[in-house]
Length: 478
Image (cartoon, rainbow, N blue to C red):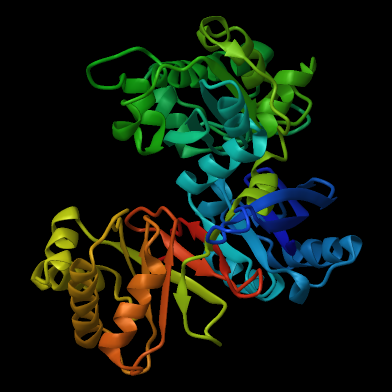
């Protein structure tokens, strides 16, 4: 059994935290079969305390203080960045909108270890919070569909898992820190996104000119919960106006929901929901009132509510424990290329793939040209479904098409990176190698699912070289 250290760092609207985990890999195939490397054990070794996210003002994160916190927590864990092999740094919610968020990501890369990725984006946050909370595992164990609502300071990230598989994800700008007030109850900050919702009800919230009362807080949080309720309405037509107003992205796709049996809540507001805080003013924001509005909503009466394994730490646990997958063991690669970071995924269409299997590479070249024009990427990973059963002739023609593409689009010395969903990477990599005759390094991996616009990191080989750790992520700084 091989193991690697993984770090998860979550810089959210309200809180910052870190975990260190050990991920163990084993060959799960019987002795006479082709090796099958799987991630078999996940152990959290260290959890940091939960900090309030340091900010200089409403537009800037305090990058020096954040770096100092992470350095102290590394020391507290007895770990140095160079010992870390995998994981993710996640900047989420309203922290993601700060003017220096992308600069902070670059600064943190030196603290993140050799392979930890710096990444952000609501789609990824929804997924890893759903995994970190335990909703994914619950849906698999109980063969049902579970929606996890990760409600933090700035956003609500919803992920639906059906029998352990991701079915949908969406992000809404609903969170506990969209309004803040001082000890006198005077409002000190109002998110423009909160006033977008208030406008639907004919009023606006003005900082420094209004004070809060429990009734006023409840009025606001009831509106926020109405938007969440609308996401889960049984519907065949367009989504209701309030949910569309609150949505960050993805609601059009979210309309195709499986039948959901249970809900869970994570994040800071989720923690308040299960702990039932009594003082609505406790945190100087909407969090306690928002949790109370959830308890009185149709969400809690229409669905079974389960308590997740993690609430406020769901995202950071997901980042440290669930961000990494493994590709192997039928893979092909050249040595000394790893780690490889931040490679954009070009997922070619089914038509282009079928043409390439028949030796016609024109559609492949056309889609690659469009992708490179859109992204400006000099290095990318060519991604396709592949086939479970492929003939020698199909493999040879596909390899020839890919080799032709690499000669047209990749600079001299750039490695050729290929990913297939189906298990065919080793034979494809060998066939491409015959076409290129050693003129270019090749990495060909399989059994990893990607979407158009994802980015990919690949770590150093494990299990005596028969597998590669992989992180598929969604970046927004482009």
